[in-house]
Length: 244
Image (cartoon, rainbow, N blue to C red; front, side, top):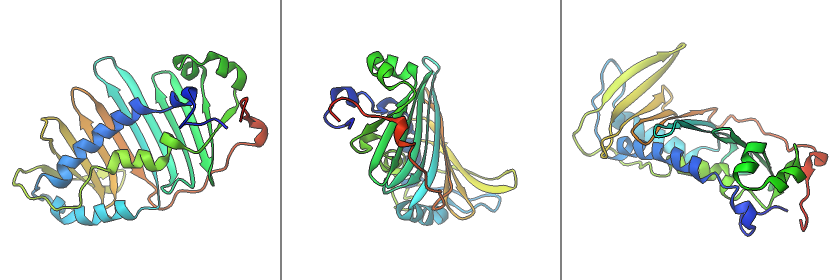
């Protein structure tokens, strides 16, 4: 099987750039989660009131859907990632894009397959592999750095459950989005870059936003503990590579 741990070719199939872009959003969130105190307004709960429960739910979550979209202002390259599934990596699906390059991954009960478009393989200098695979899927030896748990950790791993201890205020707003009430907590991180964290009335994390010189990006969270299982493609759609 194709491996993400020992094969030099497979090592290139790691969405490191997209993950680094997404991780910068978690740094924005960290400033809110552990370094700032907020003042509630307009009936919205303060961050100190809402965050401990929200953080606990992050720790206890079993499944979630996540959608990241970001743009590098220096060259207008767009990065996206969509993941949904079980956070123990037993069942999930993901799609990753960078510009015109696109990569899909599915993993069910320890079996993981990957499919890239022509631009993706060209960008990896793997045209020969693209000819061999065509529109099929390649089997991996486990999800490796494509795991949903790793992506989730890259977004939420820097959060802390500690209550805010400093006195700098953030703007707190109650937002109605198509009949759904959200609480928006906005401010400036220690590096001077603005961010927003959104919670719903159930104190679940709904959105992270970053507006900085290095990243304009948003991550949406949904379907907490309610993601439906996915299936692998048919066996005749999965290409076995030489030596697998």
